[in-house]
Image (cartoon, rainbow, N blue to C red; front, side):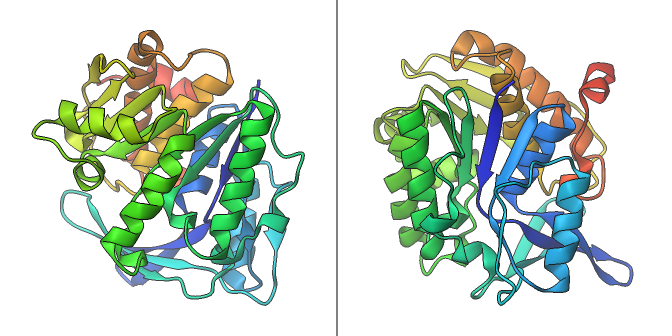
Length: 309
């Protein structure tokens, strides 16, 4: 069993309730860690936590999820990022962030240990950490991954309102795409990042930028997902039916499930493996979106095995 090391933000999702908002542990990289751990894998989180009561809450939830905490660093002078989540009648979300000078943005290259990655490990990151000081931490982690033969996973996970402009966001993402062995985008992110009349054309153009990518996954919500290899061969997967309660963390569950399989040696980064991987991840997501929460809603292997559409 190899390690899945996820670098980036851990924050508090403020979820709507009858009496206002209720805090839930979240942040895409940490959600992926929770998914890997819930499935029985080794999910390790590399990030920075602050010194407020929300940081204490996050650390408690991280430990409860079974996530490896050895790479977490602390700065008691910093506060925790908050994401206020509003959910419509279809379970879809809109985010409002409080993220000025927060702990996650202040992860530095010095916070990344030289021995954090080995051959066979997986490094996973998202786009929210690619600005400010935390960009240097991601650059160092990627450098270590390349030097040590680890697989690199990039879930684009765009949040446009956290950037000065959409163009700045796109430039940052395109800068990091060439390092990734596996890339996940939503259909909306594919439209944002790549030109083309069809999804196949857009995938081809995106793969020309993601020059090391072996598998590109495009998620389409209720319309399922598609995986492409470098030859533009593809395989599609339908979404399983579920009573949608909350879609927060669904994409993290999807890629986390695939990275779990990869870390266990169950799949390789080729299209032959993706039929099983996409089906497994789609079942996992159907379970996850039927529950409240994000990190705390991740399924187990037994639940996925027992799942019926």
